[in-house]
Image 1: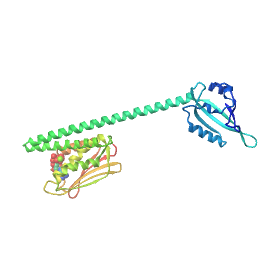
Image 2 (image 1 turned 90 degrees about the vertical axis):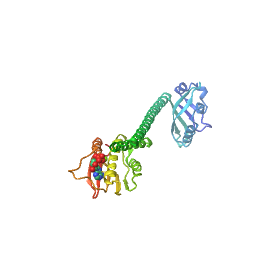
Image 3 (image 1 turned 60 degrees about the horizontal axis):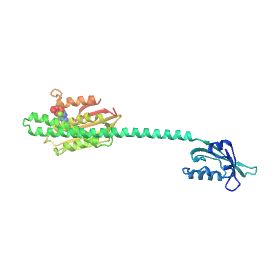
Image 4 (image 1 turned 120 degrees about the vertical axis):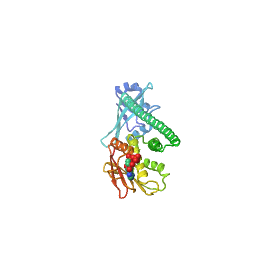
Length: 324
Ligand SMILES: Nc1ncnc2c1ncn2[C@@H]1O[C@H](COP(=O)(O)OP(=O)(O)O)[C@@H](O)[C@H]1O
Ligand SMILES: [Mg+2]
């Protein structure tokens, strides 16, 4: 500890204890009568020291961790506490300063901070690596699906047999739907979620170009599903839309196709509704390959798939648990 004279010019030190001398490396005659600014050095925070002087100038007690220097020039962290001592008339006569070397604590704090920072940086880097990798995978999958799509287009063109051609066209439409999913996933910033409404808009953009006779209505809310569910959902929606075009709105009978995407009581609901003839009577109705896989996909999505009459037409409803 030290005591300085508050009334003498430049507040000289009038008392130091041995501990102060041991801590700073000075001998008593070197410090007596001096202002204690000799403890400051090149890396001392001058702003902090000024704030301290201001506080004591107003007669307040103050405390501060400040970088000080020993006689041999080595720095140490000083936890400084200064309190005024008043005479009976209220005038400040002394300031008592207590000083504790907290270099070890400061070093520990700095090490802890550095470790936490390093850890945060590593975690951030790992996340960035993972994101880049996922992005790269989406990119490759997208390109490969486009390649498969092109192959199917070429093969369909060369196929004369109409049944084979129809089968190839169906596969082409399915692969295209999955390719659209991966194009979306690749373009999206969020690699975990899949925006169903945007996908439906893409899909309808692709399909509607050769069906200008159909009035397409989109009634969509924002619905994001887990990226892992994107492909099965896209395939199922593609089958339902394909059926609506093919069976509900057969070329020639212009009609309306409404697609709804919305949230409802903890579920996501996707509706495909045409105004065609509706499903044939149950006696004659047999699900083909399309509806068979659609039912399997619905199971995989833990969704229910229902058909009802839209009077006229057919409404297919796919209802899946939100965030399932
Ligand atoms: N939107 C619809 N309107 C009328 N009939 C439909 C509709 N969707 C499906 N169907 C009927 O259900 C049958 C089975 O459909 P699907 O399993 O997709 O096979 P595909 O489309 O290859 O015929 C269709 O052949 C058709 O008779
Ligand atoms: Mg079908």
